[in-house]
Image (cartoon, rainbow over all chains, first blue to last red; front, side, top):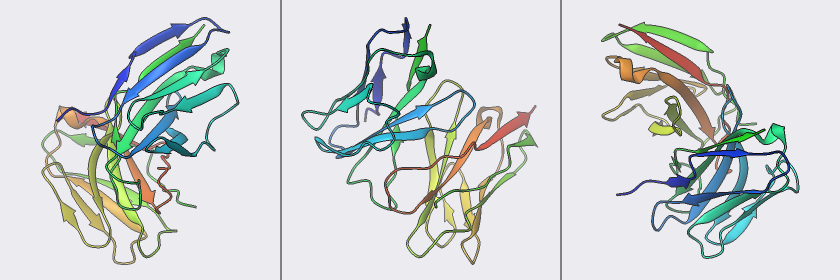
Length: 116
Length: 109
């Protein structure tokens, strides 16, 4: 079946602009994760949803970052007033159940954000 | 702390086996080890995972040490398409994966 999809794949923003990144998880997957990957580094956790509930947002770097999953499927990561340090690849992942131990996370291709 | 330690890079000749090591010294009872790989401009791709005993699938094998503090991902015959960054993840059930910098595998033709 279809995997995790993300859009857009590439986004160029001027500093100060707001951006919205979309994630479509695998159909029926309960949990959804957002990660940020800086150049040459491994992905870092941003936030976690179980259905529509955001259970952990401890990785969001500032209050300019906001994520939602209102109907428990598609999720949007919004970054307000983008800064150059926000330039990174933003990855979305989903799991079939609650993301507990042993569950496999399936990743999308990522959105590469460049802030000029 | 569910961090892992991997070599920064490794090289292999095409069609030879590759053994990618990982240390996860803080692992405990029900914690899993997952391996992912990431090709350029793609998201991490699941490779294999295991708990205690060795695991095999169509992509690779996972050998877990008896004390579970280390593991080895085995690619039986490396191809050029296996060139990627390989991440070993210690899954302690906190749902958020902690990635290190991984091992960059270079496959030589």
